[in-house]
Image 1 (cartoon, helix red, strand yellow):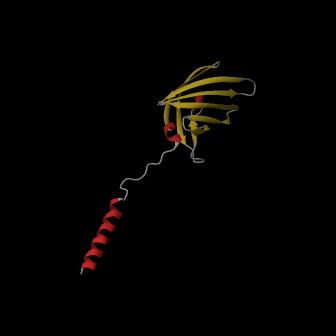
Image 2 (cartoon, one colour):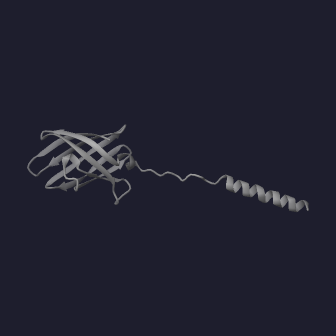
Image 3 (tube, helix red, strand yellow):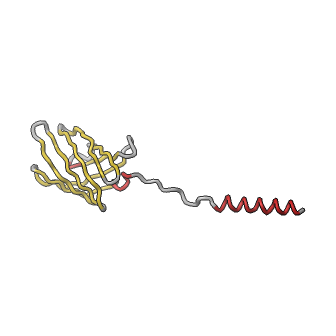
Length: 134
């Protein structure tokens, strides 16, 4: 009889310990790119003048560390400009859009994006800077 009580007590303790350690909330997995996603109010400057535009950044389906920018530097909202992100650093993938090659880099800092990039139309290269805020 004493063995049965001990066995029941042991089974109860084992059951209590196994359910007491169970997670009740799922792990939240974020990537470096999450902070970049969304709609940004942007201003770029260069020798071609100042451009105010809306920049939309979405997650890429190609890689977990890649974003897709639409409307970059006032361009078409249907043109996609990919960039790779790592922490607070961003590297624009050299891309040909409407006859212009765009390349550059940027950083994320306290809810603000800052870029330096070039626009090469085949005849001249324009250096531009951009600041964007959500």
